[in-house]
Length: 473
Ligand code: ADQ
Image (tube, rainbow, N blue to C red; front, top):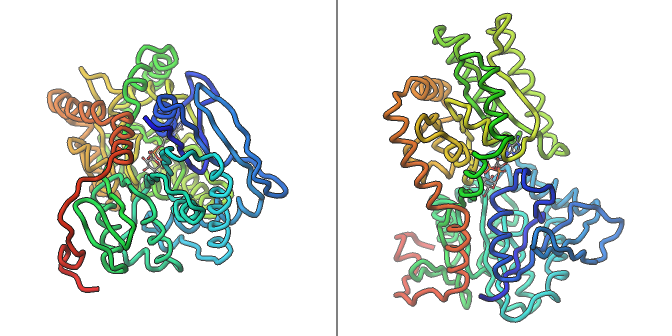
């Protein structure tokens, strides 16, 4: 296998040992990087006074990493700015929160160029390069401009927005066009792949050749390849003391009440305010459930430098306080709202103690929490996953109770249905869900992507996009 170079905004190799909550991406990439004696390149997370392009090389957990520091202005404009205040909200359909500023776009281009400049000397002629996520969409173009002819792939972890939304972004054509400098683009779902195709269909004179898109000399394969869990590793937490302790602690503190759990980064895309409203409606309309259930919502704050994240944090504190004030009794709190992170093993125990896993993002590229909840259940007495139809995971996890997160009534009904679901139905649904989580795991995901990146696509009849879609350009 050729050497793999993974590139992402941050390099996230676990340094906190076994018990840390290692993201699926870190696990998948670490395995592929170890197998190919590869390297992971990205931002260190640190600021420097003046960008020097100096690279820190390390080996962590058997994985070689190469990181660079960025200037404060870069962090402000590229990371906090264009990535988190422009692209993230726009790609999650939140035009109302999308901040458009030329400084942000300039910083984004500058940092992508700096990544390319610094990475170029490290690339050998037959290396495979795998770029991750919305922070680095134009990276391939910068590398191509520097004469890099290697196979370069890109995986988008978040949704691709519909054309009409994308077109509100100044420079949308250049951004999308730069994507065609990749050999392979991977999307989490067919919906996002189609949205990309819809945009390119209207904007460019490209042609479809099988699952490839051709523009001039460039040929890009579009792949749907949903990210999975490191299911074997996550499932192994069942044997850990931390998982058992977390489960027991919750069971004791629940005093016979059914627990509903939500675990999310504190982010507006996760639909937490809407979720609280649905739970409030459940308690209001079904008084028989009061004192019989409680919601544990775990939401560690992220992106605290961005005003919309400060706002959502303040809003959620106020909403949960209001609901608790309205419904709590002397020995029952309806919502336990916790702004803290937990280890992988503790999370496993928390999921396992919950009768209902409530995963209701308004938009989500995939959502790994949904898969973690399934993997943590006791197959003989599993809880029920209530899942938003707008999470990428809903395309795979069809046996969940699927709800519309914008409708408080629909979510409240879904929770009530999950709480009342007979054991036989829970077991049957869980079996199918677990099979999907175990089969299409994170190793499967990276294998599918890397196979596409390594292999030449089959030659197929070339169709003009206009013929394929019936549209006129
Ligand atoms: P995220 O938006 O971060 O990822 P998600 O897929 O749900 O969303 O992953 C969150 C991860 O953080 C999970 O592994 C979860 O266990 C962990 N986590 C959440 N709360 C935690 C807590 N309190 N303590 C410890 N760990 C916690 C982006 C996209 C997603 C996509 C992933 C991967 O937005 O749609 O699924 O990338 O592609």
